[in-house]
Amino acid sequence: MTKTLDFIFDFGSPNAYFAYKALPPILERTGASLNIIPCLLGGIFKETNNQPPFTAYGGVKGKLAYEQLEIQRFIKRHELTKFKFNPHFPVNTIMLMRGALVAERDGYLEGYVEAGLKAVWEDGLKMDNPQVYAEAMTAAGFDGTKMLEQMQDPDIKAKLFANTSAAVERGAFGIPTFYVGEEMFFGKERLAQVEEELSR
Image (tube, rainbow, N blue to C red; front, side, top):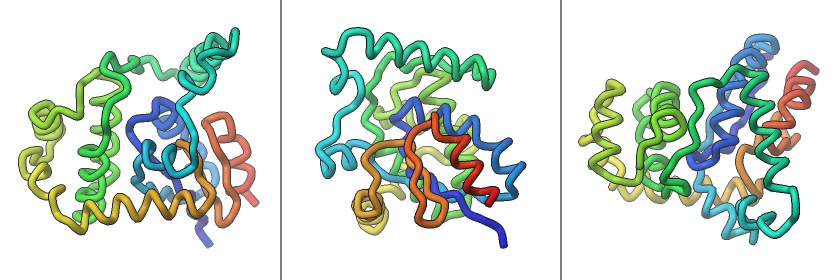
């Protein structure tokens, strides 16, 4: 039986970019399928009283410097040379995430995720600007203007909040969070454990 890896996902996390880019060899080795679940990281933080690392650890001497060291190690190990920290960070991702649900509904989520990650974490675009969003998605082969209209669907908006609440109920407190069945794994540093679980 093919195993499924659930990925609690938001474009706003650089670690979501890193994890997504590192996943293909793991999925290939284990024969697992990837199930991306679009959620709002800000909503998860709010519901769990969590904070982003630069806020939570900003006063801890050496902590953020070490986080940057780990990022550079991860980039080097996985050859993620196209990564560029977004100059507009933190970017409000509500349009991107509603768009993900439109793409999921219409059957092109994988391509959309690739395009969105590229726009945010390689091209450094301000993807909470509707014009920038529409242009970037159209350049990626989608109808960006139509997507802006489609994401106003009340069902799309409701599903994003439902996904976010369901992720919190499941135990998620940040992104990237992964599930193999009921087993939860948080952070890009847990990918080896994810692979072990998928290989069982």
